[in-house]
Image (cartoon, rainbow, N blue to C red):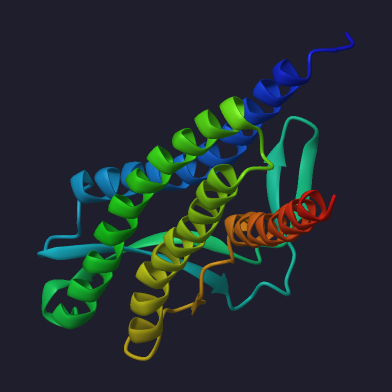
Length: 211
């Protein structure tokens, strides 16, 4: 269907942008909450434990394993997996736990602010279009907030990984730093887009003044 109304096109595109901006970060946050809630309620091995999520690499990942399926036995190589380790309380680091908790809480609060900023930006774009100082200002705020959120979430995972990789040796596994989220790429794309549109808007305003 050919949409001829420019304002309707802007509204549809703004809605799509809102979905692309909000859904991935909400999925990451909800996934973390669910994982943490299920881990906290799971049975431990008989001691007071502190559940912490890590990504690990099997040390024997160069060997092909097998799994039975409905089409027969298939081979697979396990390069990386996520684990929740129930660390003995006496071997945890209070400082690392506090720093990780602070960064996680800060990331959640910033995520809430980010979601509000997204909807404010979408509202401005729908009313004024993207080529306005107000819309670009909100887009810039959204872009940098999104980047900050993913930095905080990454730090909350990397700090425990860095510490415990030096103090805990896993039999058959090696602690690995979490994979970089695609949210970083999206944030940098929007930052670049914001600066390009800002330059274009300035050139347009200068051209309008010279006419």
